[in-house]
Image 1 (cartoon, helix red, strand yellow):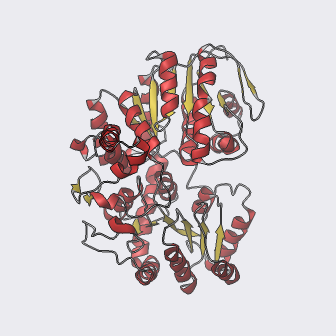
Image 2 (cartoon, one colour):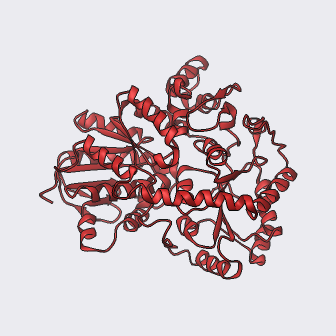
Image 3 (cartoon, one colour):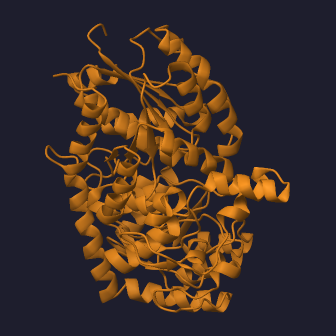
Length: 514
């Protein structure tokens, strides 16, 4: 590797959606510059998945093998298991010693696989997840501003504007300062008042470029069964003004107006934004993806295709409601309407009645599993609809396959995205009656509708939606969704806008060999 002249270090948080996008970005940046090496620090429980993500992007040719050697994926600590909260601390704390070794041009070792990595030139750029506050601070402490840091964001631009942007663009302002002020006023710790500050609403209208106007409480349509996001939010609130640039896993082909507004905001901070998404595997949407060992899912999909035909299945992921009877009612409706479905419920809060699970199994219409290969299911010809909470990656993966959505948003980037998909892009239908809590049961600005908050109302709505998606409205939404399949495939072609953005990122930080 003596000819290498650029070295990017990637550091992430233990969230698979963020990691998956980073893996595709790594492979593509290394393909763009033959003199670039990448070191990617991945939490141990996602290490094997990360190898697969890179393989999904790279082929088996001699050229791809040469590229593969310049992608160094490893963990910085060992752990047998763990969730986001459990793994966040060791992910952050173990970073410093590894980054220091890279700065000193020393070899490093993966403690999980035992793989040694030879010494290479010191880092010339760090790309850090915008929630990775500890890694950001450690990088600045060790190398100051001589090694620039780019914040990597996997979310909708409109939500980033709302959560972290200035009030002039529709943002809530400086969340960190607001939390600190409330902590000082109440005498409590910041983590004790953070959620309250973040979720404070007054009923004012929020105006953000590119999405429908919404009341501020519409950003919180569900009561969550957990809390604890504030440390990540305040980290991002500090990283964004201090970083040297931003790379987004979104695309101008998807949310041009919101991205332009976000670009304007960062220009005020004298920073550039690079929208390189969607970050989906090569050939995605036009070739079936791997089932990755999910034999039961694969068998069910093939059986459904044979028995019910193409576009017949509804695929759903359950973020989990504090009103589990709403989920039960949706499943009851799918069974009643004989609408085949695959549901994933990885949430630790998920709890379905055993009697219902047995009826689903006996019906042959449904498959409920704690893990499903999402990209495989969305790319399968049997899949017709995606019942989704509308996180950024899920939307990109769904539209990348031309699959329209049924939206059940919870918080973060999801509520605004659901409104955008339904009202502006016309590729989705949003479930309204599934909303919960005081804020969730207030009127919607766009149509004045007031959710009833009952299982009966959920049952009526979901049955109406099933009928709609099987008719002319469903055909219209599918045509619109399929247009994005084409658009997303074009953005990373030779002169595609996202590829140009990636090249501009490399140019900006002098990572292109002239």
